[in-house]
Amino acid sequence: MKCAICSVHIENENPHVLTVGAYGTPRCLCDECAGDFDIATGAESFDEISLAVDRISKKMTDSDPDAITVKTVSDILKDAGERAVAIKDGTYDFSLDERESDEPDELPEELREDPEDVLLDEKEAEKNKRFDKIFNIASIVTFAIFGIFFIYAILDKFLF
Image (cartoon, rainbow, N blue to C red; front, side):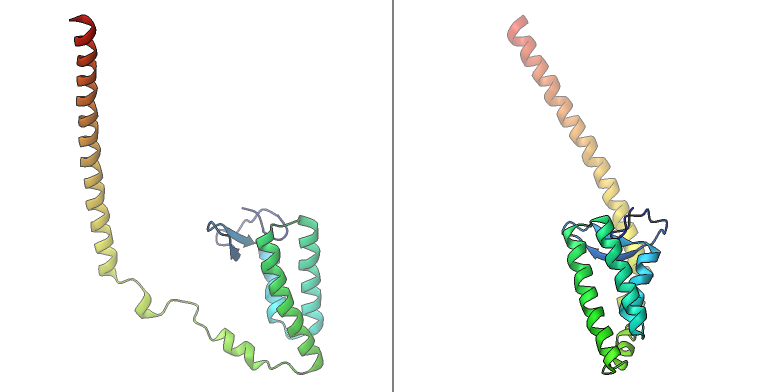
């Protein structure tokens, strides 16, 4: 898998996802580009944000990414630029960042799957597997009967 920004091979098994395309294809980021995005969107210094935005922009022009990636990155960098200008002017409210980081990293307990649900899913999968096996055998037998009948009809017409 290649980075959507700089096109280097991603070694990470769980890469950062920038966006997902129309067919569900993820646009992933290498650790270096993900770090630049973290700095661009979360740093508290105008200079750090500017340098990260410059690095991302340079990588984008060097690698020629697809339209979805360009649109997503443009939107993110636009917001990062506005945030950087507000930080430089001294008008940025850093409490906005704290509210955004209060989002849970894990699923809430009520949205997690119960062990009973997992067991029911496994039983249903096993039942479906058995049904598929029976259906496949019945299909093979049906096609074999039609094949034998077809061969008999041909032989009857031409040989008898």
